[in-house]
Amino acid sequence: MQIRSSKVLAEFITSAFPNVVQLELNPDEGGELSSLQALEDAQTDWFICMGLLERLEDDGKVISELSRILRPGGFGIVLAPVSLSLAETDQEQGLPPEERWRRFGGGDRLRLYAKQDYMDKLAESGFRVSQYGEAYFGRDVFVAMGITPSSTLYVVEK
Image 1 (cartoon, rainbow, N blue to C red):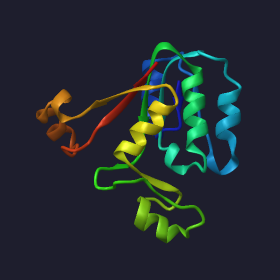
Image 2 (cartoon, rainbow, N blue to C red):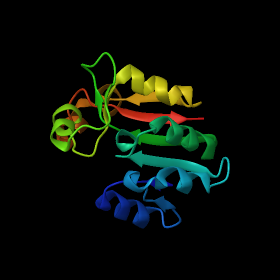
Image 3 (cartoon, rainbow, N blue to C red):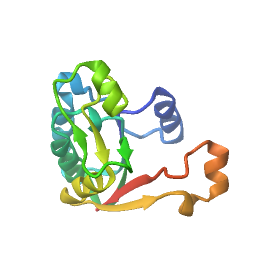
């Protein structure tokens, strides 16, 4: 299952995995919860959640729903902006887009996660969180792909 991602990634996943279910959840329409709540418990083997959590008023509810729909032994890739320099997640609603760009890196974002807050939020919903960075993938891969050395892939499992 793929939940909100770029068009290019969506096309790749669809071609590689023709039976994949894709949900495009629009935070502005409140559709994120109803789309997930329509799924049965432990229905999916895996998911990719990309570019969504930082745009939601209540990201915790969606994380809980992701945990609910993931079968035991399943995994998910959860991509959101995480700052290694923050001690606490920076979040505030009601800001004008220019201030959200300045603080969160996007005009439609509501937060920029601190690393420990992000990992704790995922774990509180019942996920085991693993981190994969340069040490796992190798420096050569990071250089070849233009990935910064501090980048981390967060994988959740049940």
